[in-house]
Image 1 (cartoon, rainbow, N blue to C red):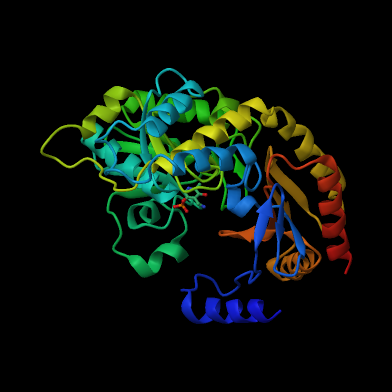
Image 2 (cartoon, rainbow, N blue to C red):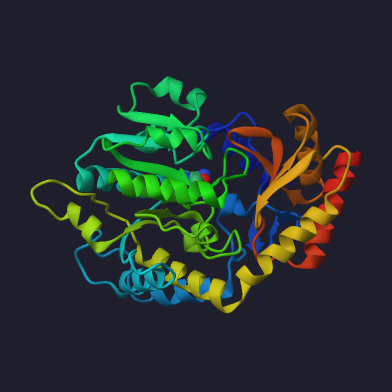
Length: 396
Ligand code: PMP
């Protein structure tokens, strides 16, 4: 296809590259769980643009909300000055999904920015400087978020990063003793995503919460990947009977539009108001078009009963993906990692699955597992079709 060749060339020549293995697929349209190429070829999306399209691509209610907002206004002013109903309505809808203590929402543009805001807020509120995070955590790519990341290989080239960061092993009870009265915050992905879907037990989260309470340390939960229904609850922390002091979210939040948030108690968030010290400032944070898309997304997740179907759909994947080459499946709801022996075994399987119309990939810090995180709207028929294509790819 001449345009495709042209666009592929432009992509390689003029778009900054981030990986040695770009998927290099051109997409012209996407709807529901499907994406379509320029020649009408279709791809079943098993990764939701990395945990974004939880309600499917271009959900009609999201598109409708965006269209209505386009007729009103786009950007008006930096975040936090004018009263804009897309932002106020969204903040209220978010708080309604959360425990009462999380009643104050700071809207930003992305996951990394939400993490930056949360870390700054924890420092301001506690007046402490040390932050604890987990080995193999991924919290984003900006310098603060990278500093609390847990993979040395990714950090090495950018040192010196933020000082005062300690990594502990996710799920290790023993290492909770690292949390002391010097610790401003512990930041943890409720479910570790880029580590290849690692799930700590309920007792761990309870012990973590207790230790934070005892030391006056703020608990920041990163649900940028795990939130918005992906695990079968609106928020993944609901599985573990704890509440964070600061919650960070993004990705699935916008139903395909860029938006993120860090959410805390009004008292904690109040630490940012104290002039003349700068809190967090963002020009585009909570952009009205993204905010209305996010509000529609929350309504769709709740009204279409998507969370209730997650466990059954995850179990169907697990029943179907049985093969001697598959070593196991780790998951929390539709956040799944299918384990293979090595990247060398997995890579050609992924390539073949993509050629045959199923999009999947691996994880940043776990290259021997296949990522499965489809739109929650995927049907049983589509799951069967996707699994058959994966099994055929393994066979090939
Ligand atoms: N935290 C987690 C758990 C993530 O998965 C990601 C993105 N993969 C981020 C933070 C960073 O989000 P963003 O790419 O929107 O900055």
